[in-house]
Length: 200
Image (cartoon, rainbow, N blue to C red):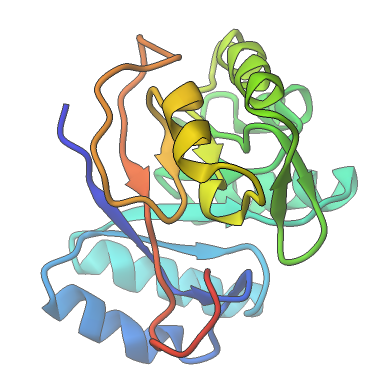
């Protein structure tokens, strides 16, 4: 299965203020898998951004970076309201999946233990892989969002231990096996629009 690049219109875990302006550049480059975060812009602006991505022929991704349960549930409801194609991130499938029910949204929560803001990935490779197994046991989970580039340990070792298939932040590579073998795969590898900006 071919991996695909997902461009995130974000900086430091927030949708950038000029996302609409940047979107034109992204679409002109030929990229069509485009996403943004649940933080950074008012809901009305997210509606306009989502509509513009769809009008440009894009596949639409929303990533949850809120850590508390109430905010995660609210972000899932926003995903339904926006009609995104994929909801990435978050850590509570038991909370999110009932909200997404019947929407057709494909859901890829974060693997491992997520802490802080901007988000970082914690835990051993074994613990993270076990979380992948648990997540992919849920009906309605289509893959995982792996924050490999925000892992303080052996990143190549983590990728080798885990990656199978999911949306892997910061990776442009191709991996051949999936811990969720029934699911498809795109790699979330977005970068912010500025070279000098921190990771998305």
